[in-house]
Amino acid sequence: MASIASSAPNSSPTEEAEIFKSLAHEMRRNVIKALGKKNQSSFTDIKTEIGNIDSPTLSYHLKSLKPLIEQKSGQYILTEIGSIALLLMNRIDQSHTINKAKRQFIYANLITTFCWVAMQIIVANLISPFVDVSLVVTVVVVIVLISQINYEIIWRLYATSLGGAKGGWRRIPKKNPPEVHNDDKGM
Image (cartoon, rainbow, N blue to C red; front, side):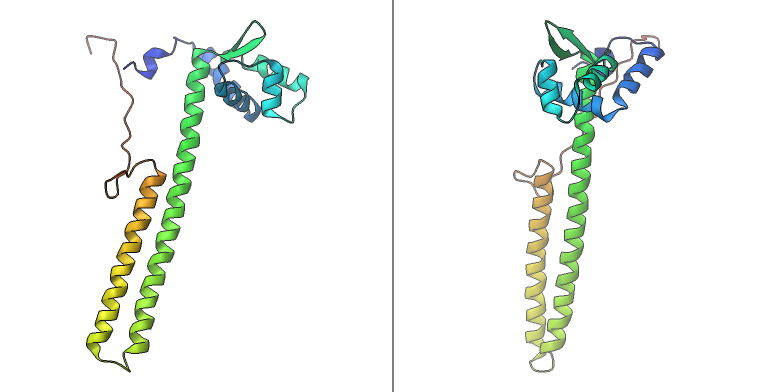
C-alpha cells in the first residue's frame, strides 16, 4: 500500500501555499466536491451542480484551482493532488458526522440514565409505604434490567451509526494510521 506522502508529487513551498490558498475558499471546495461526484464535468455541469453562482465568478474560481483541476477537451477533471484534496475534505466531513453522532449519543444516554434513575427513586418511594419491601426490591430490579436493555440498545445504535456492530458488542471501527515510509536508508 503506497503512502500518502509518496503518492503526491514533490512540491515547493510556493506550490503548497497555492494549493492551500485554493482550498481556503468555500466555493472552490464546492467545485472540488462537484468534480469528485463525476470523473469529469463541463463548465455548465459545475455551474448547475454548485447553483447560485454567475459565470465570471465560477470562471475565476476555476482558474484559482489550477493546481487541483485541469481542463481537457472542454471537461474539467481533478488532478492527482485534487483527488487527494477531495479525500481530505471527505475525511473531514466524516469526522464532523461522527462527532455529531457521538454528541447525540451522549445526550441520549444521559437523558435515558436520568429518566431510569428518577423512575427507580419515584417508584420505590411511591410503592414502599403500601407494599412489602421484597416487592419494592423486585420492582427496582426489574427497572434496572429494563434500563440495562435500553442501554445496550443505545450502544448498538451508536456503534451502528459509526459503521460497525454487525455482531459485536460496542464494536467501534479501528482507525488505520497512514503508512510512513522513510526513503533514507541510513536513518
